[in-house]
Image (cartoon, rainbow, N blue to C red; front, side, top):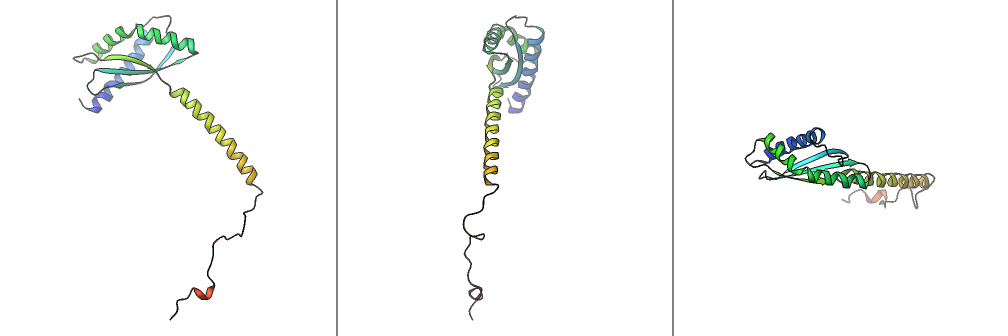
Length: 146
């Protein structure tokens, strides 16, 4: 199968899983979960579904357990909806992108404050040495000798 076909099916799996979690899975352990991405292998046999959970570590653990218990139902419904010869196995992975983005935002804030401190220190500074640091030849040496 082509890579474009796998991407189309992965996008469809993402939507299907999100709808199933909203409508069919009635597990009380399931927290406020968002399906962020789905990837499908080239042979269409394995689907990786990435999700985020709003809440603390306890909410993430209980949601992971709920998703693991609903994995069979989700796989069968995805297989029926896609109409493939073999239903892809579904694996759920907690998406670390929001935590990484938060960490990057913190680092950028630190860099901005450090840049502001450097700019404040450089505001009244004068360059060391001459204003023109390059060496120049005297004017009479610029003309070629005949």
